[in-house]
Length: 213
Ligand code: AP5
Image 1 (cartoon, rainbow, N blue to C red):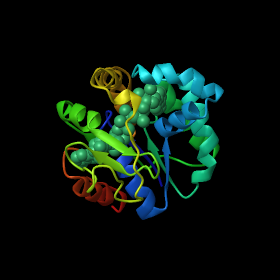
Image 2 (cartoon, rainbow, N blue to C red; image 1 turned 180 degrees about the vertical axis):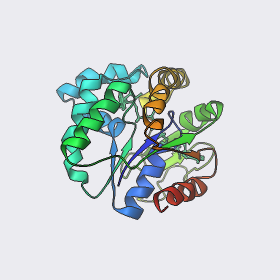
Image 3 (cartoon, helix red, strand yellow; image 1 turned 90 degrees about the vertical axis):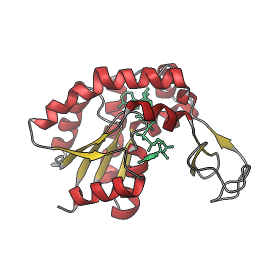
């Protein structure tokens, strides 16, 4: 099964993709994670992407499509595309990559959310530097404020693009460039919608109902 999770920044794509990966053995293909890894390793792609990401804008279609192409073969038990495609050109590139491998999209799941709530969701999040466990200033603090509940490490980090001004640019990019690709999939009958404002478990249950139908 090959699934796209579509929704604005903070809609919960990464949260749900990680759950699907654990529960179903599918592979999460997050272009955001791939790009952050490239930036951290200062690869040629990372050097190009760093400032663009920090500004909340989109990295070039050619770069992200190539990243997905490199990882697609490792997901033959099923892929969850998280944060890709984000433009019409990326959607067309994904179709080609899948067709070349005899694979097809099963569902495009749109997480419907209230944009005002997203700014609070994103600007409050942080994670453990060691194991990556996610936390939130308001919704999920570690039991001991200086210690990760999961691995006991003491260092936490925030994404550089999670500042309010940058989040607003990211939301504007989504409205201008990504939301317009929905009709491309709607005309093929692939789009299913879930309530991304529901509790995390409830969103998972809605997605499970689609995947198991
Ligand atoms: P990327 O990493 O893809 O970020 P994003 O799309 O902005 O998405 P986020 O990771 O911020 O949010 P999410 O929807 O995954 O939500 P999450 O589960 O984390 O991209 C970053 C940058 O990389 C882009 O701006 C761009 O520059 C570049 N890039 C990446 N892909 C690209 C592409 N294809 N083309 C071009 N450029 C690209 O949840 C957010 C928070 O909410 C968490 O704290 C979580 O715990 C909480 N939460 C989740 N669900 C719920 C819920 N139901 N209720 C309450 N809280 C919830």
